[in-house]
Image (tube, rainbow, N blue to C red):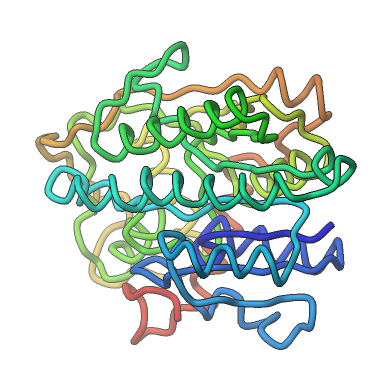
Length: 333
């Protein structure tokens, strides 16, 4: 199976590509604009692998996308590319509209044109996998209630993906994930951000009372689910993937501190937990996200394998190995 990924130099995309190339040994082409979160270094270990091709560019460049389809003739698109810097969304909503909505529309248009020219058997085999988020639902996974410009842009992209299946027959699938964490995550996100602050002895800011609940899914489990959906997912479906082990933000940060206590010294402070500070919550973060894996478990046999403590331990080990004393607090590169 030949894959075409977008945004594969980012966090989830790079972990997926490494697993796909190393385990499946199938060719893959990756288009990435290398924005703030896209790091070529995330894929250093396969940059010379003949199965892997990197294309620098935007999915809004329709000529680039069309030429990529024509030259690489993929059997599946896995669409990771998205503007996801949620703290910027309120000030830069147009950027999220352009990259997440219009970008997905342009990719769908070129995918549809390519798919229409395939043989009937190739059309039946083809899939378009759209990686989305649980934030499109707001506080409860029941109906779409996006509460931020980021969530609204992803919800709109979801609707376009669904519409192209029902209107044109394009075999699309949408994946809604919980909070994915693990190696190679950009340092603006909560877990690497808290880790870099702890290593620097800085206050660990927890918004509000710290009781916002999130379902934390280790990236290895997430990419295993995506791989199964690529191979066996049913077109027209939307799959939810989560760890089904919710923790409050405060509980998560305390767990990280306890793990760090066993790994490194903390001169000058009583403990890493002593750095935790509750601050007034002026953000638009949803109070609660939850997941139900029943569909993907029943249809494809996927269930998460990594406990939060195991995943945090592995994640912290990875950052400690890849951040020198000078680089701690900077993006992995």
